[in-house]
Length: 265
Image 1 (cartoon, one colour):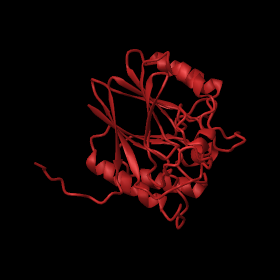
Image 2 (cartoon, helix red, strand yellow):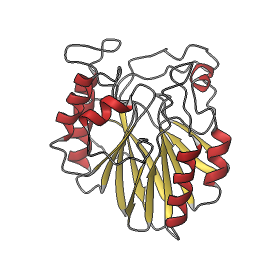
Image 3 (cartoon, one colour):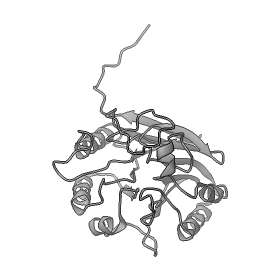
Image 4 (cartoon, helix red, strand yellow):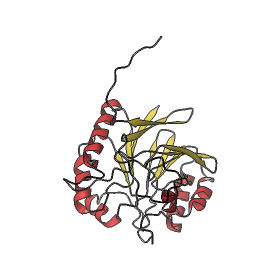
């Protein structure tokens, strides 16, 4: 069994700034320490987009400093709050396509992880996602190369509607195209962020796990049109178990106070 730690929507801000009274940097550092303490045997860490809140150079600099001491390999992805130029200025070594999109893959045993770039910097609504033909063609090539490996695909914007109308409005605009491409590969799991809630679904029969933010969460307000609603609920990270039988997805609320395990009778 292999483990993959997944963080999403960490929304780092400049020093001294907060989001609804929460310090995103402190939350991320707490979550990273918790994950490394409890799962030092993990094979990789994936950060599933919205690395920063404003895509400002000082925010990426804080992320760089936070990750410089991480003992595990890290896959960095972009979300709607990110921008490629300042990200690449802070992480010039980041793997990218010839088009500049931040897409990459990693093989772990009999599994292949594929990280997609759903950021649409030209979106009129500023936050919705898009996968252009070049990115979808790159995905097709990586799926073909995977052969018999089981594939886990990571996206910031989920490939499904969630019932949160405001978030679905700024969701992935060409979900159907992505789902059609994934149907041609041995994809066993999709992992996404963006919504700031723990949600399960499926896209074309492929299980979809949407994970919570380390920082602020989306309140349970189905149908509400405002995508900026936020609430201070426990921050979390995801833990994927890559087993011979398949993928198991856990969500760990790391900001809850520690409790002592007891045996009940």
